Length: 232
Image: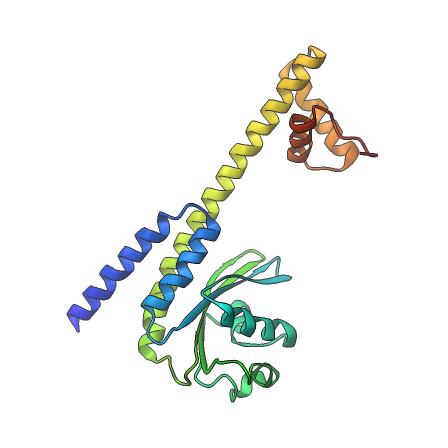
């Protein structure tokens, strides 16, 4: 038993390290679903479902077509284990998908799909954004207590890696925006013989006038050498 725990800890540590090495948020999510299938007992397919602003629900990473088909059935019926994991419970176990009384409409919808059991874990809740890791098996009763235990540990590592990837992405976007605005200011300073503060004020006024984000104003100016107008 002690050896099994040590092996699991070492395996999860290795997974965490590999997830942290991914280049971006999408690459991290793709690595999470691949690793989940090789780590969590019973899992033959995996996917990640997200909700943005508690409105836009999407499947953002999968190991194949089955998670997409099952998730679409949940979108169509407005119910299902993945949605429950997103909004209500941290862990949702479904030994028999078709016969589960909690989601009758969903069960009828997926009756022809090769999905027997599911296991879902809430990955994150950040303000209005939600995420869940979902596991699928063609067999009923594929997920047991060990699956839930290992899955919970795995989901914890995955959530940390995904948060780090998101933070890196935001930082990269902020740096890119800063550079774009700097380039746009440089164009205006040279063209109109004004200083940096005056050039920034021009960008701000244009942004307010045409109702576009400052970054978009800078992008258009650096690309076309023209400031956008309401008619453009």
